[in-house]
Length: 256
Image (cartoon, rainbow, N blue to C red):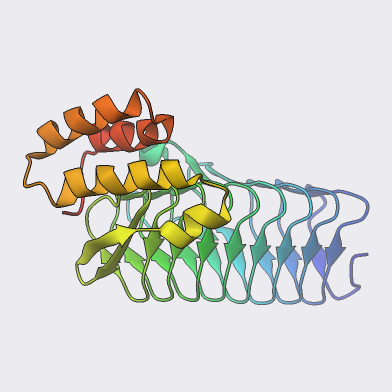
């Protein structure tokens, strides 16, 4: 399953059925789980742990040194879960000691061509990154978030679960769960209704999320007051709990 023109280090660990295309290089301390397919001209540097049934397309660079001047050769890690598709020419860096030492990509993600995921980023499950979306260091992307093509996320920002960024959005503050955002700098434009419907949210849940959005963005309340009001709603609408937690824990502030 390993092409004769591929180079696989003796200290790499690959499941028996892993496919590796021609001219790819798999370095030491790289592990790749069963059912994974590594295309041609891919470079994977360790320490990197890749789970099962991942498909990595040509010219991607996975597990490279972090692009951080503080990095001095320390051993850091990249972990990738299961069932991810990583398309052409993507770059995903390992972490830095200062940022916790780990860059993490979860499972069931669709990462399109030319995406960059920098050091110490934490990406959840079931996300979609359209072409050339770019994460600076220390960015968190929560489950089911969708990033439009050429989106750019400033370091230390968070993008909440089920949110949606329009093409070429520039994000310099946190984007709360469920919110659609667009612009430079990104501003809120309602909730991701279609995405929530596709994921099985009930009509009542979507209505509650819409009311919470209006409290946050249309009421004129201070953020602390809006959080208190949404927290009251969360007692009967548990889908709002993640929203109040996200808002309460924001360090950069949220887009408003």
